[in-house]
Length: 331
Image (cartoon, rainbow, N blue to C red; front, side, top):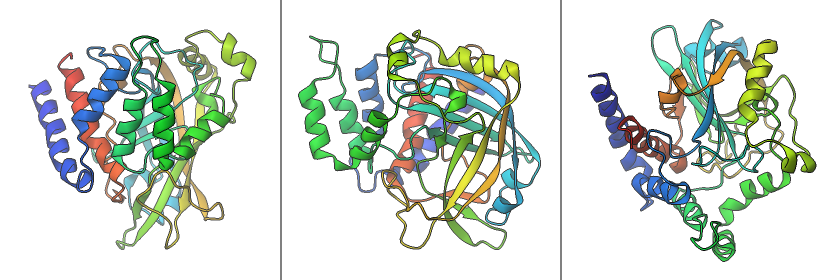
């Protein structure tokens, strides 16, 4: 019965989000999930993207500055339990941890009234696609050539030439080496969201989580010498030494700031404030742990936080639902 209820909820989420997300884009979530499977293969019972991951548990305490912008219980000052999943981008469960590309931090905040708030982030301040079609075209371009086992360079060049919105994130990961530990990476919400206060006033915001351990990158020499798997153990070892923390920072938008394009950064002079501190006291391999079966749908939001009409943000929910149902079914 629990599986049936979960499948129903995932299907309902898909039905709710799909019409809005696809109003101007003839791209289906099924096509994106299929493209991920074509790129990385099908690994039954596992996520189609960010497949390789690690669970963590801890808590979050919000600050008064955030409560003045959002009535969400997330910022009440109470200690909010958090179940998190750190992950490596892509659908290969055996991918090398030193490869360049996205790392993820997904958070499920469990609020006192039983509701939840999800935040699903990557370690870049922008995304690779302004619209779902760009993301799909990127996956198609990344499909390995059967003869070489690698993407066709000509296809990648053609994609870059025809999708200017992908340039920002592509350059970011080209210019930045990956971190030696999840604990040394900042994570960004990438999308614009709405904070709604107790008087129903809406403020456009972006958020990021900055590690108190400091941001660090592997050297070029370390990129080629690190073991295949080190991120999980590095996080486990760090938590065993004591709590590991990130500070949540919120950027406040001004009129005219883009709110539906996750590839564009806001000007650097926008007001920012510290909204709270995230603390982890446990980290474990994901197999058999709670985070493995959580669908970190970014549209799961508490009262006082709401989505914008960003087409990529709205598209993520039905795509996640399809992947979620497949892995619950063991596919």
